[in-house]
Image (cartoon, rainbow, N blue to C red; front, top):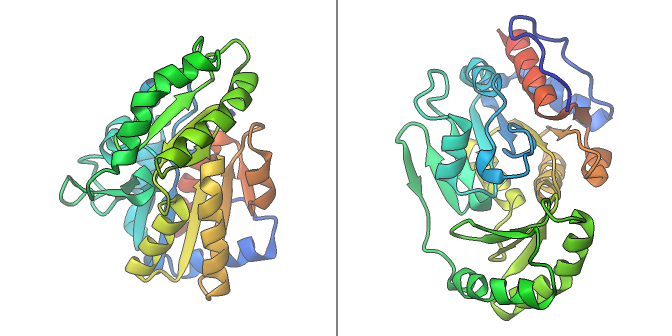
Length: 286
């Protein structure tokens, strides 16, 4: 990832490489008060780390969001993490300028509003607990226990391979057994950057983003992400565009997820690049 620039010097606003992206950016700049900016957390606002519990937002992310948010209709963080965890790791609570921030956690199954400080959510899916109980035995049976570990996510459960001797080999060895486990319990498997997550179907970042944009009544949307889990949100922006809502797709650059970069209108240099983009937008709208 690139190093972050000095917070007093906003970089020039980059130009999207696609006509649709340029249209999205133009629409956002023309009427920011009816635009939504939505962002993934891990890999987008926070650098990817070996231990997800150590993830924290880029040090300039919250100041950049706080400078930009008052000029927009809404800002949302859309994440697979529990909403409360993302709020804590992001440092989003009680920040002047972020009074209307929403964190859509567990792919939109949970929602935290800065205005109330409360998380709202439906009951968890019992299939997640059932699958979680079987995971240790499954990992042992396929010889993938060493270096892999299980992350409890409440409404989902994830198996990480980043610490394994050969992370990619462990990831591939686990994919099929975890899909079979998920199928038995009515769940789906969401692959990510050296992580396989088991969660209920019918909830993804695309659904969450679409519902939020429509709720706000936004006339333009920017979405930034870095991982395979962000592809549904990219697809949602594509559908919103076809429905007359201009959009800008930003990839927080990673060599691990080329597919996202290929679909993006703009690729920036990881969380530092996302922060620079947010600061440049705030400066332009200021």
